[in-house]
Length: 145
Image 1 (cartoon, helix red, strand yellow):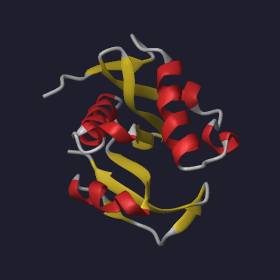
Image 2: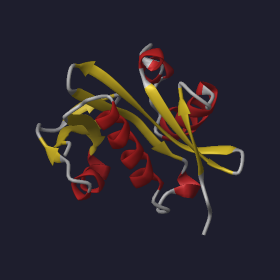
Image 3: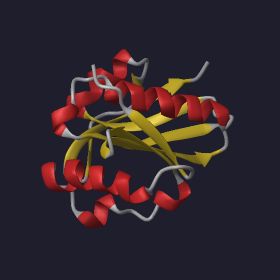
């Protein structure tokens, strides 16, 4: 079984590594426009990057748009590493970070094909389907213990 390293940004990681994964997954694979992907909010977020050796293979970011609320965004795992539990690991890291930041609930916009993944992590769908970046999404929330 592969051991994956993790780095937090700001901290010991480089934001360009998170961008590499997001470029591969969202822009190249899912055809999200660069203008939508690079939304200007990265400097206001805490990012985590997972590494296989020195290669970044997964990333996600967390923002706190209001007091007590954490918003999970840009969860991405390179296609060749999906099914290895990396999405779950990223979510565990983000939820732990949200607790450290004093948040009591987490919000995310899930792509419809992965809605069930988030449901298994305790998230509840709180909206109808809507379009974001040309991809069907739903809003989901989870209270933190």
